[in-house]
Length: 220
Image (tube, rainbow, N blue to C red; front, top):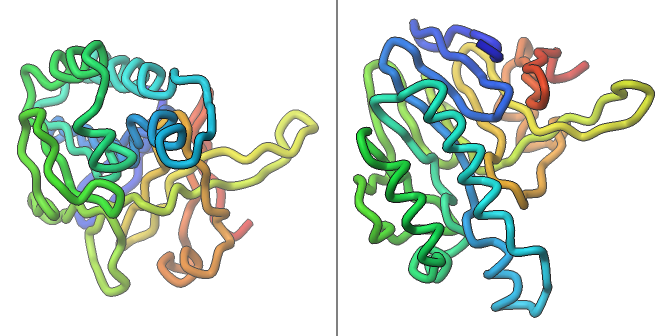
């Protein structure tokens, strides 16, 4: 399996190279910040024109994870849609594809700051999910334990192959895991940003996504 396994609150989780999180014992797949419909939202609000392929690319990557792992439960950790209009106005081919991906598993939508209204696409909409020793939510809380969240889109800049490259990454320590954005058109917050530095412990790892999951000290 192309991923990096780490312990959290008595569980073993795997940070997948794709940016998805896998909890083998529960057969649970978690992804964060899909931001489906972002190109359409930018065009609608600001007149910015981006190639309208972000939703297709994101769903293709998500489909690959579902096919590879056959999860029993899929948890989307908020900001699954770029705004509520994007959820309502998702093109029919994308809606059909998403509906097909949802079939056969328990699908949970965690509300985010971009998409607080529950999507009218089936599944279960929750503010957060408590399962065993873990709590799944969109935005990390400072004093939490056993927390899995997203929101910040962490990225780490490293020199790889002689080039400076910013790679989306997981941030993990003994108390929490913060997932990278899974969406195709998403920016990122540098791992040395003060808000991330304040949330993560001294021993925190950054697990870079890409061709292979690569774990490095967050404060390297």
